[in-house]
Image 1 (cartoon, rainbow, N blue to C red):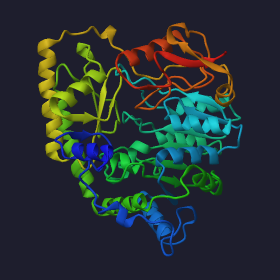
Image 2 (cartoon, rainbow, N blue to C red):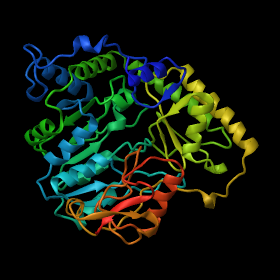
Image 3 (tube, rainbow, N blue to C red):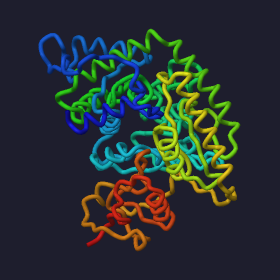
Image 4 (cartoon, helix red, strand yellow):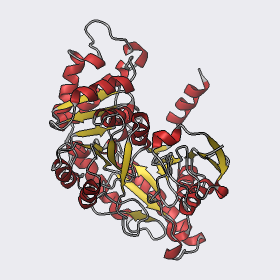
Amino acid sequence: MSELLKKLETYADSDYLPMHMPGHKRRMGDLGNPFFIDITEIDGFDDLHHAEGILKQAEERAAELYGSEETHYLVNGSTSGILAAISGCTAAGGTVLIARNSHKSAYHAVLLRGLHVHYIYPQPAGKMGINGPVTAENVDRLLEEHPETKMVYITSPTYDGVVSDVEQIAEVVHRRKLPLIVDEAHGAHFPFSEQFPKDSVSCGADVVIHSVHKTLPSLTQTALIHLNGDLINREKIRYFLGVYQSSSPSYVMMAGIDQCMEWVSSHRKEFDSFAQRLQEVRAELRKLQALELLEVPGIDPSKILLSGRRYGVTGNELSDMLREDFHIELEMACGEYACALTSVADRQEDLRRLLEACRKLDEKILREGNQVPEKQYGTDTVLKTRHAGTIQETFEQPSFWCDLKASDGKVSSGFVIPYPPGIPLLVPGEEVTEEIRDRILRYVQDGLTVYGCENQKIKVVGK
């Protein structure tokens, strides 16, 4: 047995509670031996890139489930859908409006297509220290300022579960006959209970991308892209799906998507029960004193954001304590909070275990810690940036590794990305400010993974 397989099986046999993706939580779904059903495009099994038979029928069932006019399976994750959507809705060198709190894949599409980009900055979420929603008013203003824009792209929900008013934003964008793309990767479960936010397909978005593996019982890397309306070039998007996805798509993954869709279709009531379980555990988490349940109006309740900032506990420290002391593995840790990702596969006992661990941790922090003044709270919100060039032009310029402490005023030639959540602090062409530099340093010192930063150095333009 290989070392990786041995480690995976050991972990699977342990008592660690997965408060992270994939949404099947290692207990839902059964495809048997994957090697037994792993085939190529043989007679009778269709071709994902030219679906006419069994795969076309499967995609049509998924479209019906989500109320979409057209749906396609994705086996390269939501990343491939985002790349194809942005590439297919613009011409090379065109201008786009993108929410600045978007996943790195959106910026990679801008890079690959040589696009000019203007940013929509999300509103602050009160004193929570997280990104709030994108507003229709802000989108409207930016479209007035940049009439050359050809497409609008937002993320809703965010990694934290914050939802924008997609319906209002779609109205603003459609008034100008432009398409709206929504990265709803973390909201594949939204349509199946009224206790969750309204989904973006129902809200009128033209292209919606869902990661079914994130919050539904499906294999990692599986996703869907939904195409609606006549403001998009569907043929062009379909073409780019073939560019950004493997020419040898996995039938194991596609069977997993199909099985997931079938399960969801016949188990809708499970989502209401799941929402009720969440409501009960969130009510108890609100009673904690040292730990804080971060919430904003309309948040997706399946994302449980926990912060120890009242007592100076970082997100990474909180995540480490839950892992080491209680064998609970969270989805993500940021500077000021950590995120437990729940799904319909989480049972009552799983959520109670998380709650009891948080209660014990709360008592420990109260007993051993010292309260921190609110003015000392940090934040994980997106920082405003200044442009010195386009992403593609800057990416191709000569560059060198520069010590962060000497980087003020320099122009980034690479991407600097805390991962997760995968939202860039810097992209090529943006100036390094003192605030951005300090944020990167804080994340590195807190033990977070920051792509594009090595030994406290980042790549900047120059020789």
